[in-house]
Amino acid sequence: MTPLERALRDRISSDGPLTVEAFMQACNAYYYATRDPLGARGDFITAPEISQMFGEMAGACLADCWARSGRPGEAIYVELGPGRGTLAADALRAVRSAGLDPPVHFVETSPVLRKAQAEAVPGATWHEDLSSVPNAPMLLVANEFLDALPVRQFVAGIERKVTADAGGLAFDRDGEVVETSPARDQVVADVASRLATHGGVALIIDYGHPKSAPGDTLQAVRGQCFAPVLDKPGEQDLTAHVDFETVALAAREAGAGATGLATQGAWLERLGIPARSLALGKAHPERADEIEAACSRLCGSRQMGELFKVIALHSPNWAVPAGFE
Ligand code: SAH
Image 1: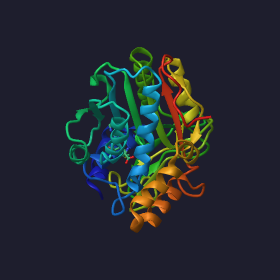
Image 2: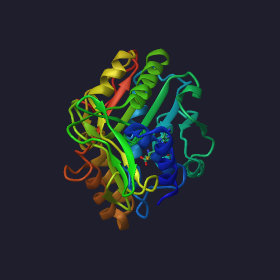
Image 3: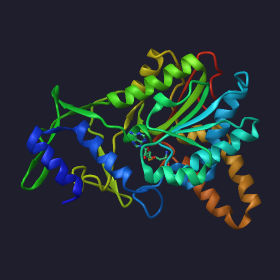
Image 4: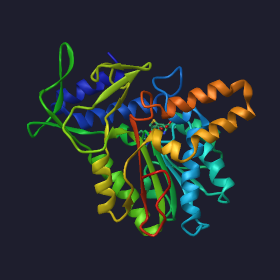
């Protein structure tokens, strides 16, 4: 039994079954606080860890939007759940080459990952949540962040819970599942109202669906493979698909503009990743094949290109970012 499973069992025997939301929250808090899960030897690999081109494209998109929105000199770079800091380091190179050297603010709860981020991006400032991030125009990125925030699940209108018995943890009911995520709605509303008040643009990249629909999307990944979600609490990554229709609605309600949804592949291609890949391959001929393969992995329809989606939120006073229809 994992240490967290023991703690959850105690909690269930004193307070009763746990909501899926409370379960997911507890598992991920423990999981991220105790390890660096990223990379080839970890549990999963993310786009910025595949190639520097991913962060460069994100940075170029933010910088272009900033440049077409009056180049406000006080703009800050903000990232939610920056992982190892790789995306930020790559994006900031692109932003600096466009003429802005912004203060960097990371929203990150994991002490292990904060350490990796400090090495990748010296001089950053860390926050537990957005509330302490300074009020300024912001260039914000959140890659595979919302999927880690907890979802609630309902079956026939009744909230689904996790119970404990001699055999292990189990769900208290099955059937057609409807998911909501107050935690995500809150983050999106916070980001959007800051954009509306102080200016800026936010890129949200994740896997998920364009329209709200029923379905159980909670999944666990350990050692690059799917695993049963109630197995080994705290020792595997729990995520749920992002409902982008709800993201766009929450953002507009809070006063920001929201672009249409693009697939990651189409967005990267519109931003010029094929040219960047060729240029990098020419500069490093010994790595040209690897660079081309990384480009296909990020953009290919059977790889990450269609599963992952991108939406941008922006201040109504800022230009619409590039790469969307
Ligand atoms: N964006 C990175 C990492 C994705 S993994 C990449 O693309 O490689 C999810 C990240 O979100 C990790 O950095 C994790 O520690 C952080 N995280 C998860 N839940 C969080 C929360 N509630 N508040 C702040 N950060 C969180």
